[in-house]
Length: 379
Image (tube, rainbow, N blue to C red; front, side, top):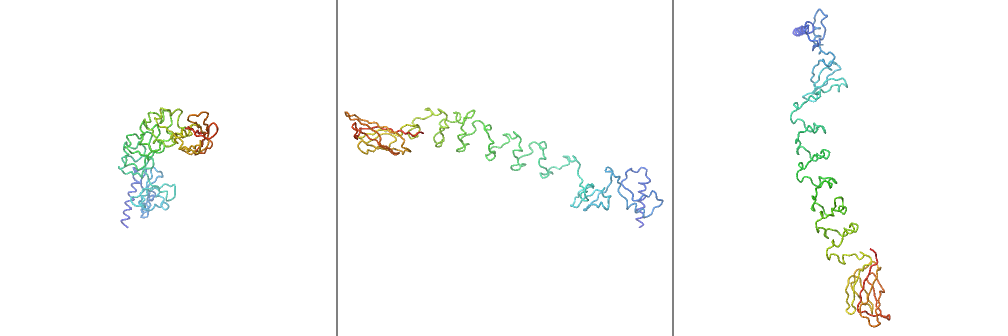
C-alpha cells in the first residue's frame, strides 16, 4: 500500500510538471489526466488513483492529431464499452501470426468498421519488391502491358501450349526469322487462310497437290492466266491417264481449241468415235463377194446368205433403234439386158436383210455388192 501510494505520488508530481507547472509543455500532449487537480488544495489516495486509472490518450478530435494505442489481440476491441478504443489501432491476430493491422472507420457495423490498414497509392516502387516474388497468380488478366516487358524476355518456356492466339499477335509481328523450319504444318493453317497472293510463283509442285485436288473450276482462264498456258503445263504432261473418262466435255472446250495440230497421228480410230458423233454418218460399211463368200468392212460382223439374191447383214453392235437407212450397190458385169436391182426388205436392231432381182423381177445373185448403213438418230 505504501509503495503504491509512493508510486502514484511520484506520478502526480510528474503529471503536475507536465500539465501544471511547465509553461514549455507541448500544446498537444500525448496523455490526458484522469482527474483535474488544479481546483483542489489537497491530494488524496482516491484522487491519485483517479488521476492514473482514468487517464486516457490525448485526442483533440481531428484525424491529423489523434493519438492512440496499438492493441494486439485475437478478438475485436469492444468500442461499445470502451469508446476511446475507436482511436486505437488493432493488430488482429485472429488468423494467426503475424497479425493484420486495422483501424476503426465508423461506416459499417461493429465488424466491418475495423478496416485493414493499407499502403498508400504509388508507395510500392521497384526497390521494395524482392526479385521473383510476384507470381503469375498475383497478376490480373491483361495487367502486364507491352512497355513493361523487356525485349526478348518471353521465350518458349514462358508460354503455355496454345497460349498465343491470333488476337495476341499484331499485324506483321511474326516474320520468317521467328518461325522455325518445318513448324507450320497443315493442322496449323485455318481453312481459306492462304490465298493466291500468299504464294510465290512456281512454289506449288505436283507432289504438293493431292490426287483429284484440281477441279475443273480451278482450270479457268483467270486474269493473268489459269492452268491452261504453256508456262504452266509441261509438254506432253496431259496424257490419257491424267484425264478421267468423261472428264472433259464439249462445254469445257473453247471453240476451235482442238484442231488437227492437237491430235497425234493415228490416235483416233473408229473405236474412239461415238456412232452418233455426227448425224447421217454410216456406222457400218463394206463389200461382199458372193462367189468367195467373204466381206470386208466395219460395223458388220458377218454377211449371211438366206436364199437366192437374199443376204442378212449382221451388226457388230446391237442398235438402240431401227431408225437407220441402208444403201446397197450391185457390183459386177451386166449380161445384156439382165440388170441387178436391190433394196432391203426387213430390218431389226441386230441386222438388216437385202435382196437382189434381175430386170424381170426374179431373185438373182450379184457377183458382189457394197453397202453402207446410216444412223438417222441425232446426237
